[in-house]
Length: 280
Image 1 (tube, rainbow, N blue to C red):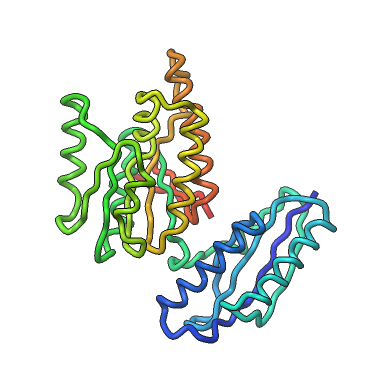
Image 2 (cartoon, rainbow, N blue to C red):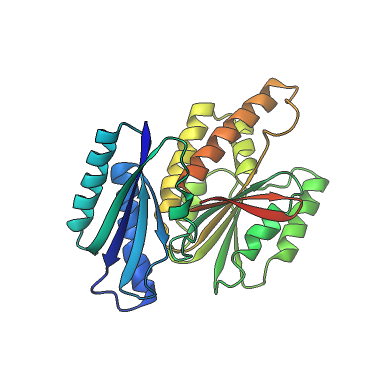
């Protein structure tokens, strides 16, 4: 078994601005991910609106299958109207070899879906907010509901930290529907998935239904153009919950976190207020 990487140099002939360059590359990246189920990142290339270098990594497989898939990806890019292929190289590595060297410096323009995870009071929300401080307009989608005095104090603390020009939307369950109220090209902070999953369980939703809703949420987030930061809880590192519902919640949220992490361009784990980038 081997893994394969295609590094391809692209020319964007009609791109007249950095914004248009980002939009074109995002469309190309989404097409690659959906069509071939691959990981894609932009790596260092020429500093130009009209040039880019993408690294495309396939799932592990036999050598002949990987060569076939990589060739299909190359043919697809050569026929893509958004870009022109100006150069490429293909590499195969034994399973277990790290391809991280192809993804060392992913550019911010494509890192528009970021997942931030961490334990309780780890500083994850504060760090997630810091990622959007420079954005001219931010929509904050909150999933928490006031259930007691302690939760009310937590919500107040979160509200007090947000800049006054941020827009706040509160939706405990129907996140995909709530996204329709947010302009696609504006920055979004969704905080947090852990509470959202808890809300759905309490509302009587089944595990399969909740996981399907999570997949629909991911699809909606991937369609956005603006930078999107999603906060979740890391709940699988502590004691085993004593109740059956607690164990269901832990397992379900763990699965949903994996779905989000796989779709995200970047993933951070926050421990003791210190963020660690774990993807790419």
